Image (cartoon, rainbow, N blue to C red; front, side, top):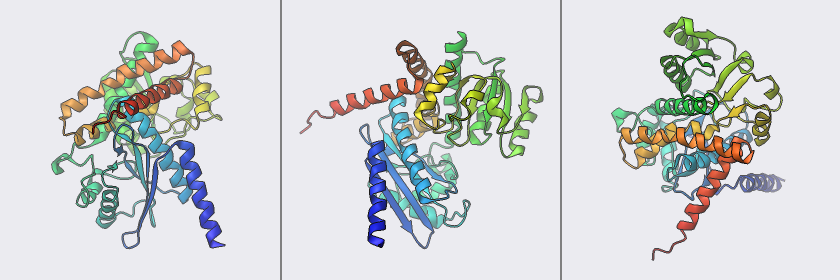
Length: 368
């Protein structure tokens, strides 16, 4: 009976991999440190896989597996659109007892397991983890990125991620209104975490009017104190229905779904959260409602670009310059979608597939 159960689970995992086009899924377990983790490598056509390590309270192993598969596929798209020579990967840690149960030993175990992949996968901080966690992982692996500057890394990626989203907003404003200025634009931010808070500060400096929401009210109050006349606080549910120019998801994914699309009152959706759409069908429904959607895996690529440049030992100025590419690429996506009468997601995905095909063809050249 146990053998049949094992066979069924393995068939299910392979089916999930085949459906998403994944190359490799690896499970890690270390009893004494409490580590239980999954690494998914989606596509290594462009180079070794690159993706953050997430540690959130998954209710089941299947939920964690679904998340890592979806996130790693998004990283392939992100790398291709950002024009960096890395593939898509992701790592998730399933908390052994609680979402805050961390230890130096746990992350040293992370480092050992990442090293066992022998350079096929680079990782660093993501939701639920911090650069300081990976100082311990880096003691066991040379494939750790996004470390604090004082430890030789490129520092906090939330800064470059927020800057990338800002570039995307300027491009969206240019496309919709004929000017990239954000002055006077009403921007509704859902999630005032590391990226959302930094983005809020950047937008206030641009002269935007903010409506913000977060499950942690003190985070909102800090932003409101920066400019009380320009910041309004609402709830995490009401913000999705708020009339605004830009709705900006900066928390968890899946917030755009078939049950709530009819309630949106924004001109565009553009934010840092991964996997904002519940399904590809949502992109078509948004297009039908004439709500412009900026593919999340493009506009939140600033952090990816930073760590990619870190691996290649490029300067921070080089990373900042390359992040400006998000502006031009997003305009290209919008124009392609308009020209072919398709959703922005389909337009972005077509660009990804074209780049993967071209690079795969070039790498068929025999080097001897």
